[in-house]
View 1 (cartoon, rainbow, N blue to C red):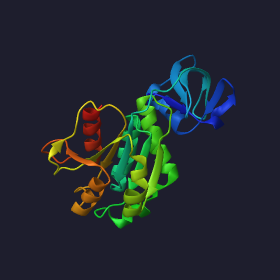
View 2: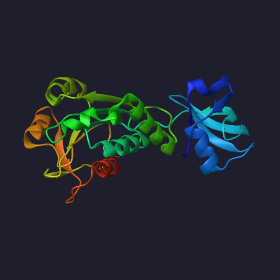
View 3: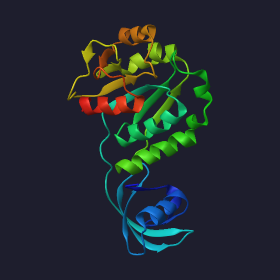
View 4: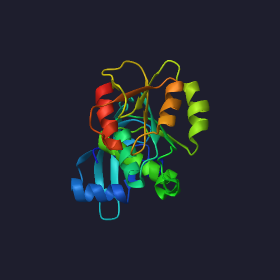
Length: 235
């Protein structure tokens, strides 16, 4: 945890907060902080700065805070992600958030198991928690917007095309002929498929609305690895 995120309910005054639970445990066990120590803090969807510990115990952590800077700018990328396995979903949301992605669409695909859509990891509370873990890692404060689309065709054929003008649309496809571009300027919309990739019909649907299929090399990567590899190339 490189940044302690503060909720509006943590504030006891304009410059003082009181923490319990997971964040307190981290400060106690990892930071091993004591009164007078300074920790990096940020308000969710707001500014960040430093907090000075006034009191700390096994039950509560009291800090006075000073907010001095705006969060880092977002990555100019919208992620279209075929729903991965539930365990992979958590890691991918946290990783995407830590890299500055603030807009994600989780979609269905032929190779996505129907049971995945019943996973409690798709609950809003869990998606928020995974996003917070990514923000804490990166030192950011702005939660991403995450949308769920259980039907592939209405989203890809009807909704997605209206948002593409002025953006470069790329489809991660291990069988593509072209390598992913490097140092792209402007905003990118990036679609990543499930394990095994999108089927041919889905690839054709993406191509019909303007997506360019691209690959990252001869190796087939896991979802979260492919995401990091592509972002490293694109930006």
